[in-house]
Amino acid sequence: MAEASKRRLRLGMVGGGEGAFIGEVHRFAARLDDHYELVAGALSSQSDKAERSAQALGITRSYVDFEEMARQESEREDGIDVVSIVTPNHLHAPVAMAFLKRGIHVICDKPLTATLAEAKALYQVAEASQAQFLLTHNYSAYPMVREARAMVKEGKLGEIRSIQVEYVQDWLTQSLEQTGNKQAVWRSDPAQAGLAGCVGDIGSHAYQLACFVGNTQGKEVLADLSSWVEGRALDDDANILLRYENGAKGHLWASQVAPGNENALSLRIYGDKAGIEWHQESPNELIYSVLGEPSQRLRRGNSYLSEAATLVSRIPSGHPEGYLEAFANLYREFAEQLLTSTPNPNLPTLATGLHGMRFITATVYSSQNNGLWVPLTD
View (cartoon, helix red, strand yellow):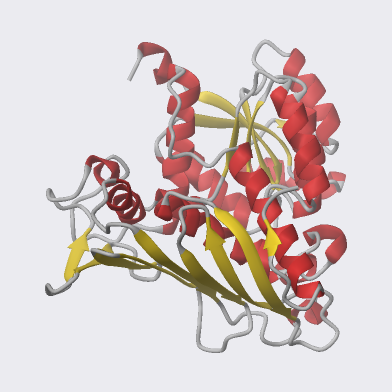
């Protein structure tokens, strides 16, 4: 790595105060490879909570207003280089815009925004900024996911025919939002989550994974969304048919009301020569099945894997490596991109997020119109 890349990037964070889940995940990711130093934050819009959270993390520059944080940090000689946005969805766009306008790089949790209109407005702001943008679709940074993508791009599966993906949980099977659970409350609130519930929260991950590994994008969707829990305003289960730009067809099932499932993200891709299968709950393994031959179980950390997988593997084979390390891979690759000015084609970008919002919007529209096929275009 170039000499310039040895310095730590000064990192700020918006959201992620006490009681938050994803904020701590992002902080761990930033620390793991020692490319970032967290120096500032607007961890809560409540002053007392923001101050307590900052003190607990040893942050001396604490803000309540993210606009003020963006202004002050951009004017300091030692101001932040990058901001990490870990708020509910409805704040992604205004926070990102505030920092992009000040020339500060942005790392943002998914989905990109609450609405497609916000995503388009954010895209325009980013186009006018010199700052760069990373969307943290962390599942795309697992070693065996990178291996799967490399295999598809190398033609090992042949012509891709079918892409099947599912992301299934059970934690919202009952009306958890009525108990005051913070994570359930905002995900079930259209004012904070946006126009979709389950589709925006985990369906967006499943869709990005399918496109990333399949080396394609969706062309059109037909969707049937459900809100099984009485009184729930947003979807908690989704069945979506997809037609992809490369000619493949597929199905996406996302559910947060499937008892017995914790975080069951699975991907299967089939071509005319072979198929691959990956399960997030067994992340170190990729099943590779060539037509007419016994299936192979490829394992993370072995010398027979491609450079794509090796570059995001930290420890020897046989040791589990997964969720937190995948987040850290994105943070590390983004730091290297910023410090060496070398673009990394594996990183989820603002364009990835904009297309993801088109997917979410088209899915909701299709379901509302009795299963109409809807193109993923404006």
